[in-house]
Image (cartoon, rainbow, N blue to C red; front, side, top):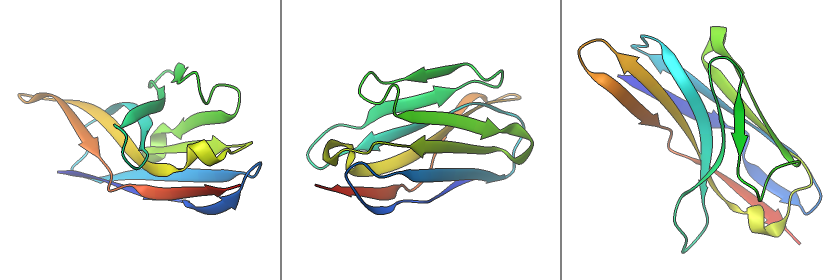
Length: 120
């Protein structure tokens, strides 16, 4: 089994910055795409950003230009640098990792989430 552990959430004022980290550990075969999702109170979980093993990135329109996703594949770690934060960015942020395992096919993993609160 693979575990994802997020860190870096917290309380920040509007306009501020935070950096989230997510490290994968355990019985890792080969992590493929990694990404961040978020879920605000009363809303569905939504994609924030993803990154492939080659470094190609994809962002939600609402965070493009403010957030930057990056990864250290040697450490199986993904980061999310969040700048110019807005109150509407308040949510629980979840790390996601995809893996293609022999005989099992594609497998997805989720972290337990880290809370980001942006005050106005």
